Image (cartoon, rainbow, N blue to C red; front, side, top):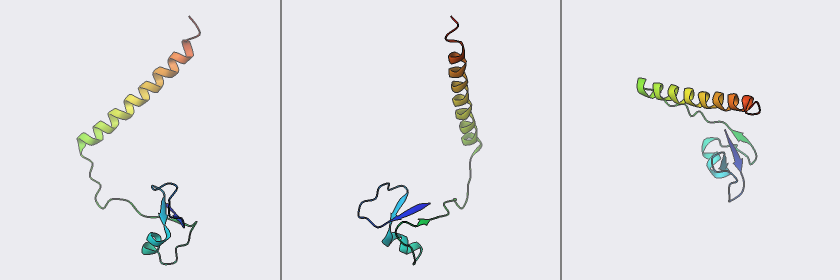
Length: 78
């Protein structure tokens, strides 16, 4: 999703687009409107190793959160 901006300077370049660039995608684009673009890659190939690495990262983050909550629960019971 991009928000069409009428200004020279964009507030957020990741989510805003100039009117002149928006008109390349849709001729009737106006400032303040939201445009939606399909950014799904044509072929989404994740290797087994990449999938395992992603799974491992998620597990590590969850374990860290669990460790923090456990510590907070018992830190006052010394």
